[in-house]
Length: 272
Length: 98
Image 1 (cartoon, rainbow over the protein chains, first blue to last red):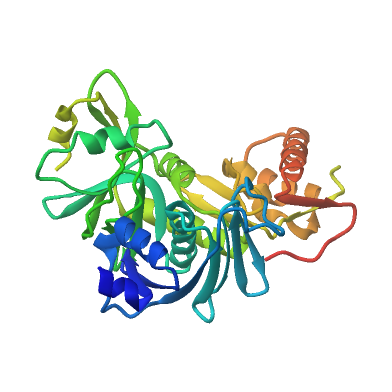
Image 2 (cartoon, helix red, strand yellow; image 1 turned 180 degrees about the vertical axis):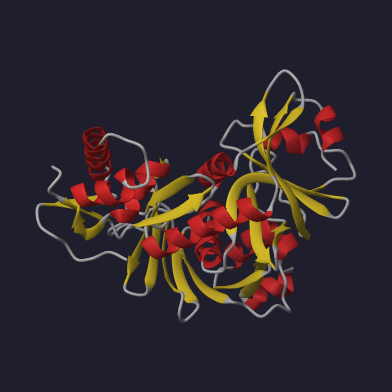
């Protein structure tokens, strides 16, 4: 770990998408290792390079509101992402970008999520507010807004289930179907997912109820529900159209059902 | 209002899902869902065909409906969609939309 920190570079591969981080800050590299250690892949060829400049707290000033909300905009060919704790400019053509931030894991985590969502949109993939797991070699997604039960169902998972994430699921097209990848993006569970992948077998729309049951959902309702859970931040019409297409495609290719469950482990009897 | 021209906004993505036409606004990420007849109006909104002609061609020829009722419903639909910025309305023909 120390040797890697001295190299000032680290490649984080999430969803089969290696992104290289370059920084002069050993402190920040240690933060990266602590947070994304299970997703470091030194031998991967990066698809995007990110130069990270670490600045002291309170010095991001200038045009950045320290308490500002997240914004994603386009300046020519570049993507501009900023929040109170970071400012990033990314060039998707050069596959390179620069981020100024404090030595905080939350800033790079937010930047990573947005960068992945933008890169994925161009490839027919999606980031979804959903827990996901692998069981018997097949992946299952449990989508829902905050409070729907993503962390609860993750916490109830039996030992033979590999948790991909309890918060942000990572989906990429693969032939006629989709592959779900583990991510380090954790929710209330507070621990990263396993760095494994599997073909997506089903997507469940989560709901709490008095009994466990699985009900069919129309394609239109499934699309509406999925779109509510898709992470996408930019207001670019072309990219939004691609995300819309991807959501529609997924609903056509993967079974989507409503999973009502009571918060105990019996729900897993129906997920195989 | 029947002699107005309507055009689909460019900042939207529309996809047919089952019997519904779903329209996603890139401006505010709002999702709209149109039924079969509303979708027919939407598809006819090319900027150069008047609303009354769209109703005649897309609704009255295909559905058993009173023309006055169809026109009134179409006007309400257009007003609603225009308020959300996903349809443009003009007194004169506009640039044709694909």
